[in-house]
Image (tube, rainbow, N blue to C red):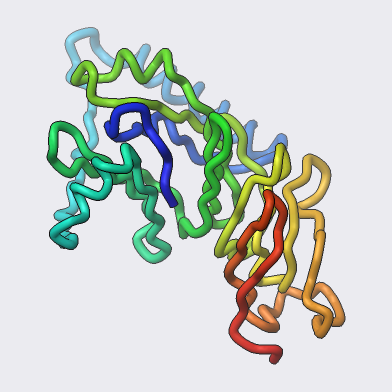
Length: 231
């Protein structure tokens, strides 16, 4: 999936946060823990060294075709790649003729949709919507490296969908809901709203009945889907 940039520089994603829980119980637990932490800080001596958790690093190895960098540079584009098992959104771009990669955590990342000034990322139980923040992109280090910056602004708690693919149709986000064998949209009131299902799917059920997985648009509207089988 290609995100066009002005000058071929990579886009940056920043400030991606995971919501731990929803409801008064989760909020109360979080507030109580913050209060306990504050009391511990007040009780500690002024010269006490703060506990800084050790940052764990993981070695990443990758290979790419010989023309990959030149193709991205010619297209002035950034490529977004999701890895389901590793739970990463990989952002690949080019800066001064060299491939630039960054990795961002989205648990069980799958479908990605790029719209006007926004990106949707499907993850485990949640669809995140990231909004463009060009003013922040200009301030990122090193100066002049990034064309764009996207911040997580909205998260839809969908539950498990196994959303293999997504696409923006105007302001509506169409999701390939693999687990429930349908195309759906997100909702402020429900886990999802079903829009279409294959004629041989007799009911909505979390059974992955045909492994619906791909989506193609024609004239900006859903026209084709892919699936594994009717059973």
